[in-house]
Length: 436
Image (cartoon, rainbow, N blue to C red; front, side, top):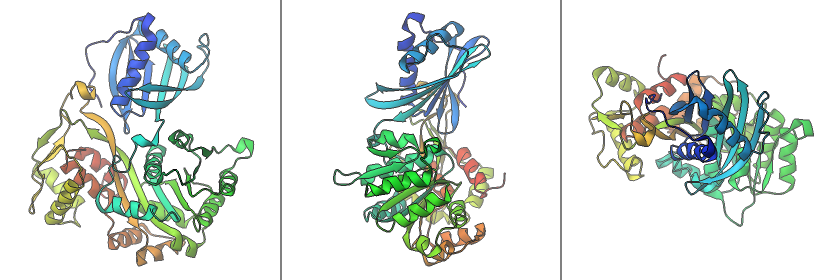
């Protein structure tokens, strides 16, 4: 969490619009996905969500609340006089040389009104697979597979944002004027400059399956489907992958859980095994501020945790992975390796109290921890043909297929000064690799 600053910034009521733009600009600079502006007894609290964590941006005087709410309503074309009912709106904004689509929600609360601002990049050009933290063999497998433009690609995400991020990265990888792209589901994908997008709306008869069939009739080369939870839509998507590249996202904590979900969707087993090209899972994680992060020697207790977490990897193998990460440009600002062939030399952590660049939180922007599973492996193919899968069996098959688990990707990114080990351990606990 960010450190509460004692200094109160002020926003002149006559410049509320300029003040709100400044708040949004700071959020974009720090890689925030959301801004929360809410009243407290003695001040207005502005917080930014970076990855999954709310960080304090600043404390404003209570007198600034009405001006900020009015500015938000004006930008989103909402009623300025309404302050007792919820209101939602959208608008586009260009700041920091980036175009963003803004979704704004205002609700009445004790003490006035609360505003939540969700930021979506207007162009997929600002999101790449490399920028999301994909590297090495994982990145090579994805790009090699996407080059064929046929097959079924499955993305597991622990939250809606991370799945959409990887889909946007895929768009950027395959996008070409000669290709026709289409999307079904998450409206965020629409802001990636895909003209052919159908938003699911059952009230209008646009169920997930019907929306997908409508898109297929327009003969796109690449189809993206977010939050594929409907069995009929899943069957249609899989059948379409025989002639097109179909990339879908499902809610799952990791690739193991993803395969378990697929096995429960009553899909044709042989077709699923034959057409699935790879499975990828990612979890958004906050990134250490590169301006104030600190190197340290891990104490004995932490070394013991790391040994347990990476029990399938020798110190030499971790060192080789870090060397590959260095060659891939991961953590490029750090020149020296944080390992040798015998041990981990150092890790990196957030500076207590942060600095002005990270809003005094120690963290700035985000990356992802990811794992990519090559589904052409014989053991994985066998898993895809089964209707009931045990987690331990999938883990063994993935290990045999050479998948680098998400928590190992996290350790490498700790070594490269990108993320903190505490956050990696929390993600590892969620997947059952470390006991809570």
